[in-house]
Image (tube, rainbow, N blue to C red):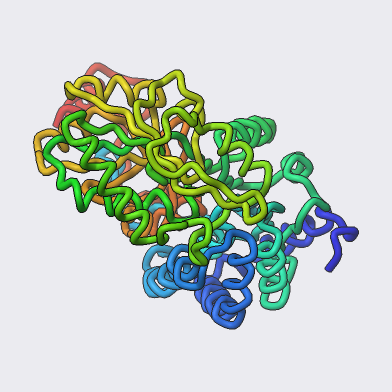
Length: 461
């Protein structure tokens, strides 16, 4: 299938297919999820090789962060989909005795899924699982920057699915801007807040509902009560997985001044333990996606504040894990999401300072708290608005399909994963089935004083 046939023609075909009602059948959806799982298993080696070419992620990390999560979710939701898709009986209103109230889960119709390059397989296929669960058709637009993985995704989808049902737009042939001029029934976008605003603006022209999975500067708090050794291990792992190119990576660390030196020493130790003495030479240390982002990240490093790392390899597009100390809000590294292996440290003395620091980049996608003080943890969770996060860990909340994943305000709108993906890709249609057997006469005009008293009693029961 070539792009020359035209997106307009694909959209027309998908609308016709959706209107046939085939995708609404729950058994059809379950079968498609099984087909998708089989496709992933058949293409597993090719997917892993493609991710390695794009990001230098070795087999273990690529499977753990890209393929495994999708397979696990498919296995889980297939068992639950029939129950989720059934009309849900709810309590009726006292004003309508004898009636039965239901919530029907309707597919949106034709969905546009736009995914980024940093987790090129997972962040493309996970929303697609939701679209299939919901009974939709989908046009999928992966990133052109992760070219190898995008080619593999297109090859896989083209082999297993008809274009009238699921279609992958490849590369630069059709731009995001062009796709957004078309009318869809739902848009699911993962990317930066800057592009997210443009997607939302385009969606508003047709009043198209959407989910925005964005990013931001996710803070990590290392409280004075924290287990420093274990905290350092979790932070280094969460920050450097995928070379720091993770929307929920610990972006910067707020650490108590009395334990900062010890935290740095422990982080240095774990960097060497995970990625050897020379990370630039380490085969399993990921690279930056392209030269543009490589140069952008280097521009965030203030050389005078480096306490560890700082070296880079232009040919390999690798930047050493780099710890910066004595960072303040005026530094470049604090003015945008890092999306790379730089670890800035901001020290605090009084707890109030923590919240003042976070306020500079509020509504983060993630928040990580390392503390053994439950009162401090509860206070922080109550005080800070954020998408999701962990206490005494990093990243792991994304692996639990039983909780929603999404941002708030600048870091996103809406959520997905597991049942939340099903909810995102369906509309809850409310239906009341009344009976003529019970019909209150006082409900109809002309309204009397007696009717008014009866109505007040009902509402104040």
